[in-house]
Amino acid sequence: MATALVVILGDYVIKLAADHGGTARGSAYLTWGCLLYVVSALMWFLAMRHIPLGPAAVAYSGFTLAGACAVGVVAFGEPFSVREAAGLACALAAVLLMLPEG
Image (cartoon, helix red, strand yellow):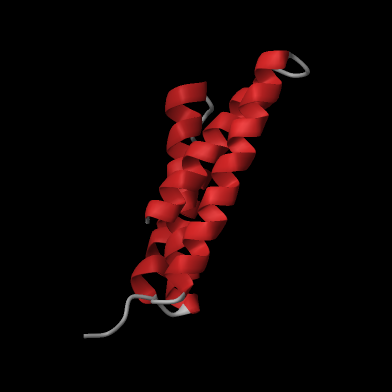
């Protein structure tokens, strides 16, 4: 989950870079976003040493999707439709289905 949070932060910063186009500020955001992606890749590597790939990948994808949608709506005023809500529900269902039994 921590890896997903770092990726969501990286997505936020990359979106800021895109919104600032070819400016110096946009370049700084792009640099920080890329660095956050590198950190998340290292975190992902460390996580893979301790958890199975299938459940981890589904949980990571679900958390990243939910977080990116939330950031888009809250920070950037992007629309959130019924279709997107259904997609998030499917992602949550996938995460729940991939939980280990026990």
